[in-house]
Amino acid sequence: MPARRVYAVEARIRTSRGRCPAKWIGLWRSPVDLGQIRTRRHGGNCGRAKLKHRFMVEDPASKAVLGLIPAKGGSTRFPFKNIERLGGKTLIEWAASAAIESGVIGRLVLSTEDERVAAAAQAVGIDVPFIRPQDLARDPTGVAEVALHALDSLEMKNERYDTLIILLPTCPFRTAEDIRSALRLFHESDRTTVMTVSEFSHTPFAAMCMDSGGRLTPAFPDFFGRKSQEMPRAYRPNGAVHVLDVNRLRQTRSYTDPPILGYVMPRDRSFDIDTAEDLREAEAWLRSLSRA
Image (cartoon, rainbow, N blue to C red; front, side):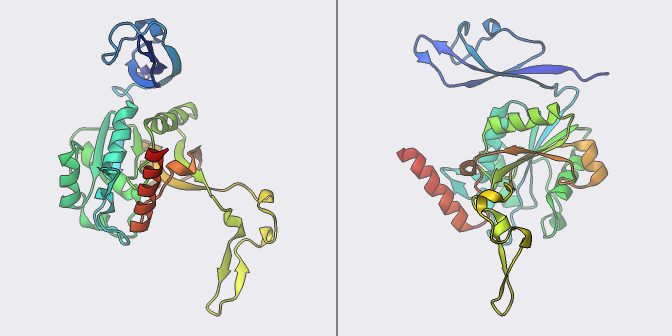
């Protein structure tokens, strides 16, 4: 049976109080005219709403989407970083909030080996349907192994998913629109893996290596001495959103197997919190926004 489709709508709404911010409206089984849209927040017919986005996604009833937040407790450099607070919310809450607001994830779960992390997640309503084995929380275990364990654990409960969206808590400033856009790119590209990235602030092609005697050699000799404008633009994965086809993940057992499409996010939403210093920098950025 071919996959049914639903239409996802985001609109700007004009009310008697003036123009409202763009708001995620919801999913419809067929193309929808804005005159049909009603929202609880504003009441009544949107009428003069201006359509911002309308795109098709797979119907979760036939092509189910699983959202996964991998959140181990035993981080090597920053233990329990995933439940550290940033702007009044834990990092796992930042990930869950964007996932829920996106409106495109059928089921959202968190995977951890640690009871403390599980309790923190459950306290704010995040589903933790299993505790992963300790050997899946030790290096060099990767995200792919954790994702496959989550899929297998849910399949044992007769839950099967076709699409997986991985949301690392360490990149907290992703938005619901980032998730929707990455998923849209995934569908438009015939289910090619999508990875969110951000551009390097300084080109890595100018990097130097240093030996034990302090002697420097260029890491990329072909680019040594060139101006930065003459070097290729380079991007790094930021961990915010990763969209995968489940069948392909099972076949390759890798979430970085090419081809991969990049969804570019700005650097100010691509913080990678791996140390206490990273967390302080993110807090400082949030404070600067509140003062602006």
